[in-house]
Amino acid sequence: MWSEQVVPRVTDLALGREPVTRLRRRALAPARGVVLDLGAGSAPNLPLMPPAVVKVLGVEPSTTARRLARRRTGPSLEWVGLDGASLELPDEAVDTVVSTFTLCTIPDLDAALHEARRVLRPDGRFLFLDHGLAPDERVQRWQHRLTGVQQRVFAGCHLERAIDRRVSAAGFVIESLEHAAMPGPSVLNHLYLGCAA
Image 1 (cartoon, one colour):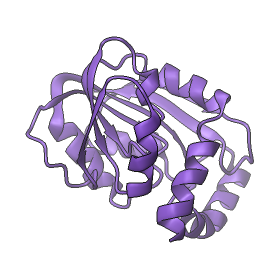
Image 2 (cartoon, helix red, strand yellow):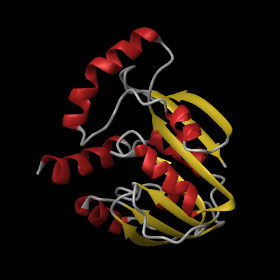
Image 3 (cartoon, one colour):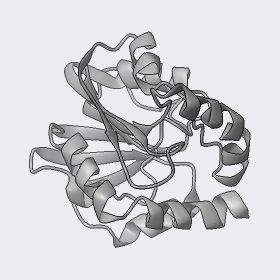
Image 4 (cartoon, helix red, strand yellow):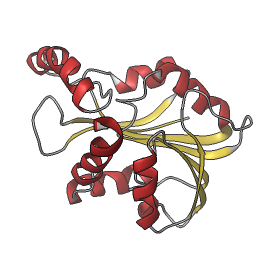
């Protein structure tokens, strides 16, 4: 009940604020062609897709989030799966893979990143925006302490994932990476905004 009904609605509200929308828009600017949105949620990325995007393929386990997505406008959206770690798409099927605020939550992140590489065309890009491990060791200690609570309250969300390291370990080459912050507690607000190939 909590994970399926409450968390998608809270996430939609919390990550729909203007400061977050501005960051999403920046992260999505290079997107083009057919886009795979890993953990598309309530589709907050849809209206922010640039004109070069022709279609969005969404992966999302929550039926509530998919229902909330119906109100969003933008490129055509087709739901193609529930689990980013097991995509039912052929190799080299998409031009861009995007993940905004989902790499923190995907249970088998390494498998999902390998699947993202598999379905991405050779000239494609992986665009990501997520919160994760902060550079400040004091904040890191709190992130490690609070991750268990965060996972229970927010359907598996990890506070302490080093997003850039996980992306690189999956075989991606990071072309650009920016560390940013969003309003909120320091354990939540360290952001990774990047592009990888």
